Image (cartoon, rainbow, N blue to C red; front, side, top):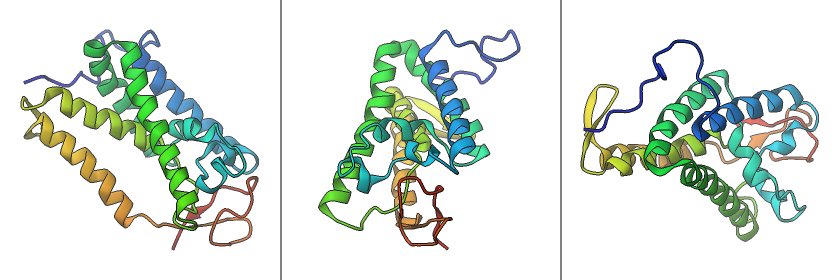
Length: 205
């Protein structure tokens, strides 16, 4: 069994430092989320992933920036903890460069593919996306796969690493099924992103 890194860090108390790549990714998630929420009434919405605009209006930074934004306080706090904890374990066996490549690279790839889908199937992706959960899920699945057939636990339930990775992948599929495909703009209430400078859209319903 390969235990997950303790949330207590190095055991010395206090907050973890920023020496590791995992810690820097966690800090970037918190900073990006706070910046978005402070500016979402103006230009902050441009940090999100707007699939219809990435290629049509050359918002090419969005597949990167959306990965460091969470929508809720719960998502920000636990996203940062998961990134630091699981990311720290992966960094200990992979090294910082590989962790950065996987965590950021796969998140960016997901954003690019979503934007390409918007070009191929118009109207299929009309909401703005945050991507902090994408990065944390990538780390979750990678953590499980790194354990493989070895045993770990999920909330006290013993699982193989491969099964844990499957749970993470299943979470993504579930969110895609139950999540709304459209969003309503707070400014004009249209079903879609009415303009790149509008306030962030709310979920349908």
